[in-house]
Length: 426
Ligand SMILES: *Cc1c(COP(=O)(O)O)cnc(C)c1O
Image: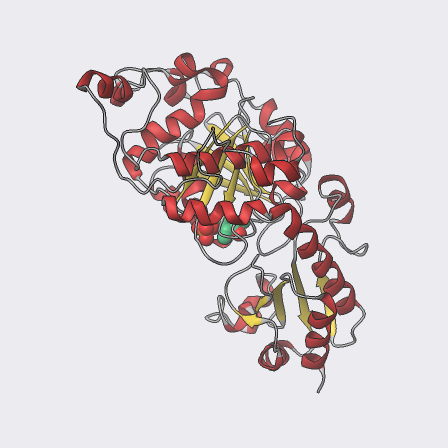
C-alpha cells in the first residue's frame, strides 16, 4: 500500500477489507470492547498486547482514518484528535512539559498563537516567536538549553506566508530537537513536510481534509525519524520510565517509530481525552477519498481569483503565493510546485466601508469564519474577528481595515470571478 501514489492512498489507504467484509470502513460505534479473561484485558492495559479496550484511547474506525493520513504524509504512525487545536497541543505537550521552551514561527493560526502565548505559558512552557523570514543568526539565537521543539505552518492561516521547512528542520536538528509542522492548508496532496525534514506533522482536519464544513477534527503524524534516545536528556517523557504506565520507557519498548504516538495515545489522550468520534472519522474519510481531486480545483480557483483581483483598480494588493509578484513565490515553487491552497487575501482601496459593501453584494461567496470548504466563503477581519480594534491598531497589526480573506471553493472559477466583479462595481 505504501508504494502506491498519493491519489490511490487517498482512496484506499488505511483499510483493506477481508473476504466478505464491508467495502466501506465500518463505524465502530462502541465505547468498549469485550474480552474472555481478565488476563487478556490486563495485557492490553500493560501495553503487552495490542487491541482495543476503551474508545477514549483508541477506536478502530479512528485508527483506520489515522493510518490513511499517516500514509498520505509518508509517516509511520498517526492518531486522530477532536480538533486541530487538540492536535497541536498534544503534539507539543507530548514532548514539552513545564520548564520547557518552544521556538515557533510568529506567522501561525490565531488559535495556536493563543495556545502557545497564553495557555501553555500558564503551564510553565515558554515560547520564543521568530519571523518565518528571520535570518539564520536570529533563528539560532532563539534556541535555549531547555528548547524542546520548533513549530511552524507550511502555509500560515491567515497570513499565507510560506514556511521554509528545510531551513527550520536543519536548525531544529542542529539543536537536537524535532520540527513540528502544521500542514493544514496545503494538505499532503500539495506538500509533504516529512520529505523536507519535518519530524511530526499536524492537521486541523476540519479544513480541506474534511473539505465540506461537516466535522471539527485534528490529526498528528509521526515520521518515526527523530532519534529520541540520542537526545535522551531532553526528552525524559520518552526515554525514562513512565510511572503512570507500569514503568514503561516508550523509546525503548516501542523504538523510534512507535514511541511518540504510543505515548501521545497511552498517556496524553488517556488523561486529556480529546478524541474524535467514530462518526466524525467516517465523515472525514469520505472527504479524504476525494482530497486529491478537490485540491487541484481549489488551487485553480484560488489562482484565477488572485490573478483577477491583481489586475483590478479597486484592489491595493493581493496575497497569494502562486502570484509571481508574491514575496513567497520562490519558496512556494520549491515546496508547493502544484500550488498551495484556495485561500487568497486582498486589500480594497477604500478600507472598511468598501469591504463591508463588497461583501454584502457577493452572491456566491458567503460570509463565514470558516475556510477550506467546498463552498466559497470570505471574511473581513476588521468587522468580524478583529472588530474590537481601531483602524490604526489594525494597520499596526498588519491587518488593514480593507483586508478580505477569501477561501475559494469548488465552484466554477468564471462564476466566482463574475460574482467578485459585480460586487466590486459601484
Ligand atoms: C483551523 C486551524 C487550526 C485549528 O483547528 P480546529 O480544527 O479549528 O481546532 C489549527 N491550525 C490551522 C493552520 C488552522 O487553519
